[in-house]
Image (cartoon, rainbow, N blue to C red; front, side, top):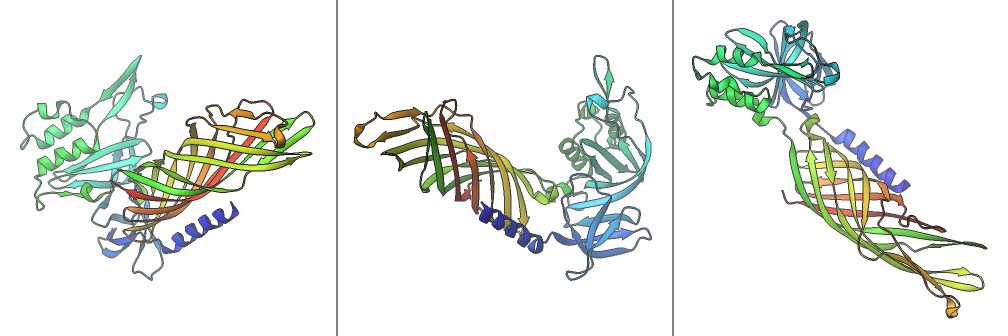
Length: 405
């Protein structure tokens, strides 16, 4: 265990120095001066109030503040423009939802993420679970008004944004029904603005095509574990514990992984159901006799957890992960012992379907479609609901994976 933690710490330390997310970009200050630089691309989930940049690879990191910067962009994917004016950030949560239908305007200065740029430009502002869209057309920037509000005993919706967009776009898109059921979401609005502006490169710029999106991966996994098990049996005159020697076993399964788009795709949620079968024998002295033990334990392990990637380059990544594993036993699982010379009959223990679970930690290296991980499964009980019996099972191993899509 200590060796694994040391290895994971080494992974994290290596990545901290090796990871480079600074990419070509620029910013414009309050005087209109444009500075070409390298900006740390973190694929912002929430709209920022500052950003990190360097004037060169070897230059120190500096901070660009919203009060000093009117616009910045990185990697032809993320562009932010400063906006100062009326903003409605009414809560979407039912517990904090407003009773008023009309927007509750406050004066604010925020960075707006450009989604589609053209004759009419679409922006997005995000803060937690609050998402608001803005539009610039005819030299004026305004929020597209959408507001849920309480109307006892239900919820009402102010969909003024539909009328706003119809007034802006009716010279080109004059079918009012086109706006009647328009959704207040990124995909629907992006599609509309591209249609209005024209999708030729000289008519509109669609920044969303280069922005990180949620990615779903499926992988085949296979590996080997060094498994350890122990069984304890209490008797009227004491107890005896059988600590089986470590044994190498095979593990095979599938992994489903959902990579989140924010923070430069560094975080993911994964599940890795895999099948393992452990069988072993051993002996213990139980004076004046010797106990001969056997164990058979087959199961499907289902770790579900989070993974953090640290990029070395576009194709290579170091990662660490943590998970909580549930276990489903498969077939007849048992632990048994007997004495020399037949002095006592075999005592057979059927392991009951177990809700036993454990924590899992791991770390490894990923290149393109391939990855290799060292994973430690903490101790768990493998015998439950049986008096006088105790048990522990743990493993450490190496898992290879291949991403099929």
